[in-house]
Image (tube, rainbow, N blue to C red; front, side):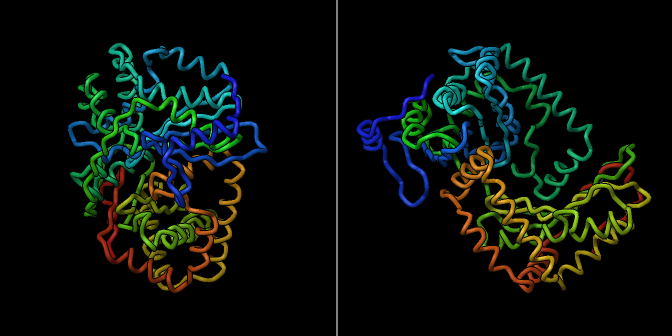
Length: 434
């Protein structure tokens, strides 16, 4: 499809048919679909994403895994395209298409040359509104996902994070695997997908976002034209997370112990969000971080060790991952404990300055990528209902002080029970205790 920019008269007509939501950096189509554009006139490509505010947290135990399974089925045929045509048509224009499912959102995204932008929007609308969930394709993809689960179960540095999540949040949707339980995958039928789309894929729950050489009025026009079959009801809210903490050990004949230690953190809505992200970077966010230097460089106890702050809408995991051999595990755990105590009492200005510079550099570098800008924009709209500007982020980073960081560390490490998950030859190894 060739791209023909709208005339001023037609653009005005389109906007008159839309309800414009001001001050939130997005517009709303007449059906209630959020649309946002980040125009980059000096590039030749466009990244477009459809962000759906639903993920594995929206599942009950009985349908755990359906969000991810549905993401796969979206590429397996529509009323006008076969699964093969879906693959061939996109590659024939030199574009790329993919998707992912998380606990709180599902994203379908493409990257194309600017002249194929309308085709990309129509394509995304087609797979999200007109998937047939063909029985033969469903059976084939069921096998693919069962293989994906088996592969994950055989990859200790992947599956240990599922064990950690389930231990931190037992008997809750946030604690269950995104891939789902094997018995569920084996039992899903076509109607299950039809019902899930009807209940969770709706105008108010989705956003179409683009970054690159594309005009706002064009994306508005095409979103209005092609996204016209979604449901209009609101998606039910999931239950608030209840962090528990605890320990999980799985004995398995492996060369290494894969280990995750974590604590309850602060959601991405909390005022301490950027503070916690900074703390995680200082603790274990790079080669100059405390854990990398002390555990790997100074003592040679692990090849991989890092800290991370994984946030959700109502909670977070402030955690550490490490992989080491059984004979070195206890010594490594002792050093981790020492570093957690030290960072709760003292952080120096050089560490803080270095991390702040890293954050600012990453913000600037990401601006060079249409895909990165699109992903950030869509995530902001789904999570915050607005775009968080670079200036806001830098402003928050500039407020951070050494005292605030040490106070936060003490609060995180002492206000909740630790969660620890480990897989390997774990028998007789030490447990983390203060």
